[in-house]
Image (cartoon, rainbow, N blue to C red; front, side):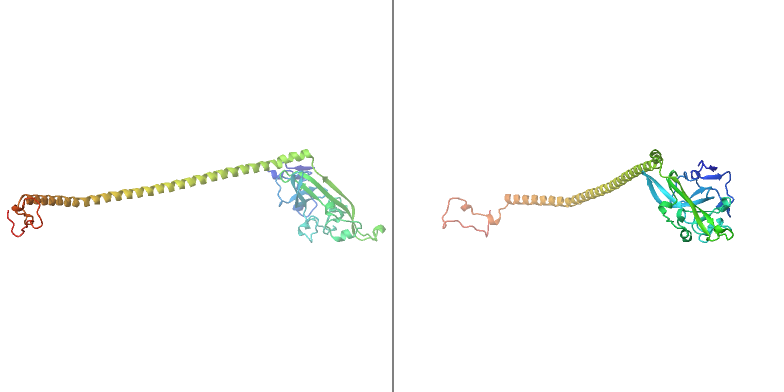
Length: 348
């Protein structure tokens, strides 16, 4: 009987076996690690599985837990999953994989591709392998006629939904062999070689889940991812909008600063022009005062000149304008009779 964790407090322990028949360790192997009861029974695994994880499958008939690693991604009716297969060292000898030395012992079959379980099967010489000695040493397959190992037909794998840990499909295939030794004292076995003889191989598992169960798993595994993508797109849109608005605001602030600077420059130019005009008016006023003085003196000069002219016109007749009194008669004269003008000694 298996006791399993429910995942309370730690979801990664869900579906892991806590004990077998009340025991957390077996008593068959050479180390506590190889005797440890852990892993899943294959019906389901812990949630949130990653490709780099190592999953463990425990079976009491195998008397151990098998490590499984990622092989490839699969899809079942649109539901994604991961295929895990046994690690290559599972049935290797201690010579090829020293860590398997805990499964070794006296009078046990050793070789790559086989696993002697005599010690846990009531001392019956049972040896396990993959069907048709798949991935085993050639000495086992060559000793038996008619064997044709095929990974597709004889492989061992679990297809697991990585979010929920649910097993989507599985093929657990194991071959049971009998380790037959040559016995000289027993006539029927006195003429044979030591041989691992296949007895049978069996397959346990499921082909696929039903459509209804697949739809339920999609709601748990796919829909949250879809909604998360939608939320991510919305957040990206909001951030983009805020970024754009921030850029526009910064651009406006810079434009306003540029406008203020331009207005300041224009104001300074206007002030310079106004100050220049005021300075020009002041200098023009200074130039106008002498000109007014000059005009005043000119007017006085003209006044004195006019007075002098008037005095002259009212006083003594200038010598160059004296005409004889006898000649004031305006009767026309002939050329011979024209009076003569004396400028030498004028008299009034």
